[in-house]
Image (tube, rainbow, N blue to C red):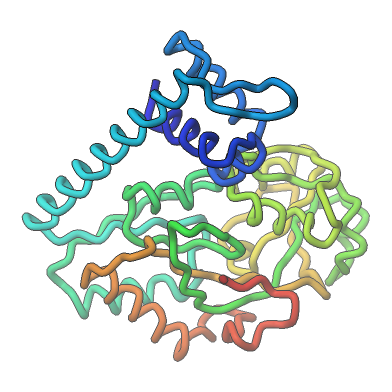
Length: 315
């Protein structure tokens, strides 16, 4: 039994619906159901009655949920106390970086923060498609450069700028000879799709589910951008990327082409909701100021308020 299983059980007790509970925990319903069944086997009791097309707590389930809530509250209190004691001894800012981060603006933000708060130690942590939100929400990092659209009440997004989207294609793809490609020419292609453990809205945006009205053909399921590049080059898949990512890396056997009529991709700095620590707020403020004055260091970028219609925005 682990903490995540307790969280899953509590989520199901609150919704009494496997689909909605799985969505609230950002996990596929099949994986969520498997975890609940595994938990019941581990404790040797049925927690949920699944009869008659409804879900209800059993008597054992009611007692278990009360205890699980107490345990998670105690863990949260202990974790907060440990963080406070740790920060009293040293001031550190842990920054999460998802692949291209904020493109060419990233080093400017970091350098400006170092000048403003030289006594704060910085550390940098690579994020993947599946942990980009969880690493922040769980306290593994204090701030994270990620991409919209992500809807999660545990984090707060500061959108920095928006930039054009590109499609990655196998070098021998029939569309690879075009300089720019329309979305209608891509929606029926077999896409690289992020793992079901990735944020669902974010996952659907990059594979055109929002334009298609639902999932399309899947060529490969991945957890990181390098895995996506390999799937394009060696499995004949396609995928979409922000402009910054196209300047960072490409695999042999693939090409990038701009999407002529696609929505722009917002780059964002995320912090935890309710975050009030001075050095985290300072980092956020510096990022906001530089996004206003220096967004043009990112080729093709526009201020977030000038992004074309259809560009996803943080709530």
